Length: 152
Image (tube, rainbow, N blue to C red; front, side):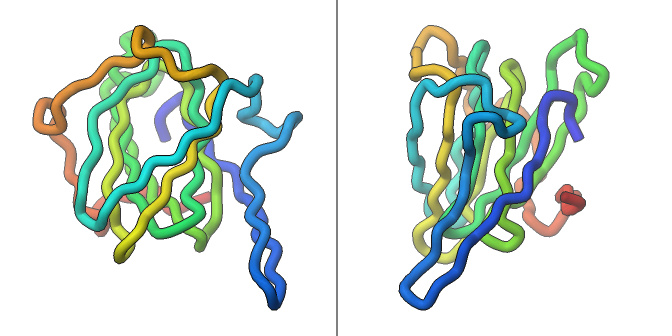
């Protein structure tokens, strides 16, 4: 696992009429402060990459579908410098992924149809604090069957 990324198991409360899916509360590990929540959809086999937030801490949840996240640590002062990690998020197991600033990431839709990523960010979006890179500039194996971290 890359230094600065951690996984928190979440609860889904089931009932006959529907479910309540927890995501993040004040006081949870990973909670710094509230900036904004945004949603991103991704179709099956589509890839959205690469992005790096210089200041923002991400709290990623996938309440609908299945999404493969790929991370690359290019922070020269990090213990996990030049390491990559792949993590699959869905409703089973249902988890929140907290990602520190300055880690490159991208994601791929794995589930059929509609896949929804939720980010509970500790700051409002600011175009000046995010870097983008073409998805072909950083090589990574986007195959969801290879080298995925499954131990939550």
